[in-house]
Image (tube, rainbow, N blue to C red; front, side, top):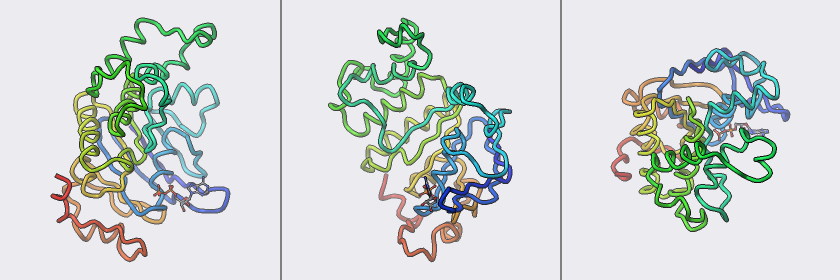
Length: 260
Ligand code: ADP
């Protein structure tokens, strides 16, 4: 379980990115965090694996007080939490398999790190992860020969190879077209349902968030303004999250079919 207890995050430039965040996310949930650009979505997600330190309150993940972890402990803690970014973060000039194997580098002995020798078991885990996202046939293809959607699936496989309990995804489909976005979201859905991995995703597309996530957390000006089931979201909820902003990104529920 992930628990935010009165969490605050103020950046060094005094921007209060998160204020009074109280939240409990249970194992196996599929949560979409939505809100305007600058609302605090990314900060909220990145505090969970301590990519950002919180400035106040407590954050507990599976019984671990994240703020109290020391250097080595943070690395071990992060092994259970996969992270997916908008930009895939892959080494594009090398093969898909090598990119997935890269997730095991922290586990290698010093000697093996130098030679880049992975164990048979690690290779098997990497190939299994590629199979789980449907791109096993691309294992020996160079990443720069793949489409954006396929590259995001490589990133997902790299995360799955770690056998995580939680996957954090920061705008994972922001650079993909609507059709490819759905393919990648289907992967997340399957992983969530079949492997019981919790998925917490920061997402710009409201229709897709409502279609795939069970729970929606609406963030505005660093605060949670909605926390509830996706199918309970109404136009009023969306107004609460988005309305009155100079940024016209309000995407009414009726437009959902545009993505089908
Ligand atoms: P979102 O993901 O909803 O777009 P962010 O969490 O990225 O929002 O940002 C929330 C607020 O914190 C914004 O005002 C943003 O400018 C600010 N912010 C984000 N990252 C930093 C940083 N590293 N240093 C200073 N301010 C930041």
